[in-house]
Amino acid sequence: MNGLWTVKNAQGKFGAVNRSGAAVIPFEYDSLTVFSDGLAGAEKDGAFFYLGLNNARYDVSLPGGAVGKLTGSHMNDGVALAADAAGHVWFVQGVPVNGVLPAVSGAGLTAPEVYLSGGAVSGVSHLMAVKNASGKYGYVKLSFDLPTPPPFYDIKAGEFYYDAVLWALDWGLVESGSGFFSPNTPSTRAQVVEYLWKAADSPAPSAGVIPFIDVPDGAPYRDAVVWAYENGIARGNGSTVLFSPEEPVSRGQLVTFLHRASHTPASSAANPFADVPDGQFYTDAVLWAAERTIARGTTLTTFSPYNNVTNGELVTFLHRWTELA
Image (cartoon, rainbow, N blue to C red; front, side):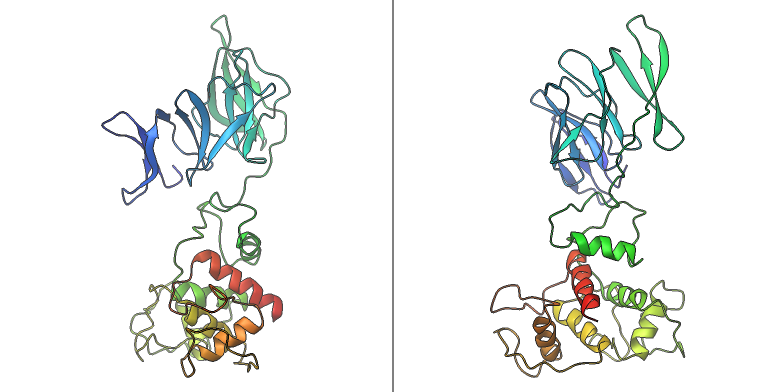
């Protein structure tokens, strides 16, 4: 679920692993549901709460503040269930508000057992299967509106890249189908030219001829690479026949791509960066990008031109660049 699998280890503790088998959620929980809508119900040291995909903890806020036990197996279409200390069941929304998941139903149900039905009618009017104190089952219809879930479960307001990610989504540079943006993952050279190409309204390449043997016909980024090559934006990666589409893009390479896409304007700014010597392929681009605040240094005196660019940095640089274009 959501790219993570809940696992119980030999010591009886629960955690979650990704497709590579790496532990993303540490094995320290007494119970853990599957992840759904970016959240999983968890229990630790007698406390019940929800975990985000980045292991962030979200407590449940119920009227009166007392939380007994989570009763829903997991989030379902943006709603889950929790019981207060008196045993009343409340509907809880799956979008955090000030770091907690608030109750959204008007009053607590008195059913001792509640199960998610997995069904929904007319959008957010969900149905919940309920077993009452007499052991009889019925359905409860949720008539309240739920907030719109975030497009990505791994970004949050306040991060430097937040507005840029939403801008990139609005412009069609990125898609939200997977629910993940992976802001700290290194970006590739293919990603950069794809984003630049899409920002230019995905123009069709004129000749469609490139010298790169590692960009085959049918590659999803081929048109973008051809366009970037034809327009002098991207060249080979240290070779006349290799583009290296899947290699991480460096900060120096990224600002060079942006500089070329802007027709290599000159910069009159003094060089504040000790690690950006004269005569490098990226020197003019770095000074231009810094002067126009498209890219800032990693410190006041370093630019780190060979550091990898993350997805969060990539959309941030592009966002700043388009605002100045």
